[in-house]
Length: 262
Ligand code: IPD
Ligand code: CA
Ligand code: CA
Image (tube, rainbow, N blue to C red; front, side, top):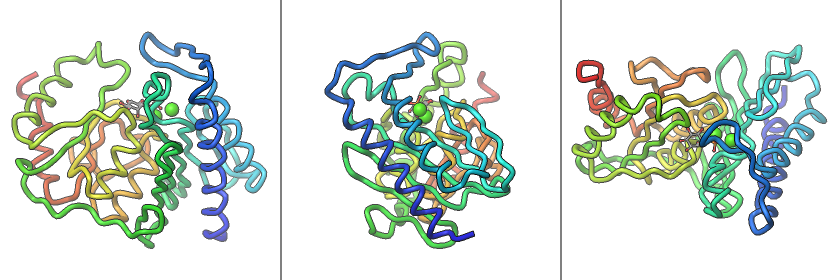
């Protein structure tokens, strides 16, 4: 299979979905609820339709897993994992921190990752073994090796109200230990910001493959590390994610281990 062609299709799909999201920002937004605090807007659905159409037109045999549409099984070993709008709550409130996230996975390993922020025009991309880039500039994670000097991001899952204690315990421990904590509202961008050296680490629990598959490849190709909270190597189905510059990974795992105090 031609990797360059697959990357070109991923880019075309991300630009098409993201351009649609951008066109909806100043319009009256139709917002529906998937859960009490979990939203879906016409921008999520319109972006998804455009992305799936572009992937299908080039690769009708490939499997596609997309957040709103679900799984469409294909006969090929290739699987596209799509978040058509990561940061829906931000978008619904007119905040620019959102993106399209598209990964191509083979045998459960991401081989292409594309994250495009339609309001910032930042394009994060990675191909396995070929490095990570931001708008054509090669990315490397930050060199900071102390949590006390680190800016760290986290996120709160939609079911946070049912798992408050461990979420707050982890937050408290990381707040005490770090230079600062940010909550951006887009897990895919959080991971890309680790790759770009803006954050030293990002953690969140209860994530989905579409939140993390592209970001994982971008972080690792920038020299960083992605595991779960038990230090198991990344797999797309993993729910608890720690992405870091590698240098503070071990200390972050210790801080996130709240089993004894739950
Ligand atoms: C959400 C965002 C958010 C994270 C949530 C995700 P969505 O994705 O990435 O930052 O905290 O856990 O579900 O719903 O905006 O695609
Ligand atoms: Ca998401
Ligand atoms: Ca989404």
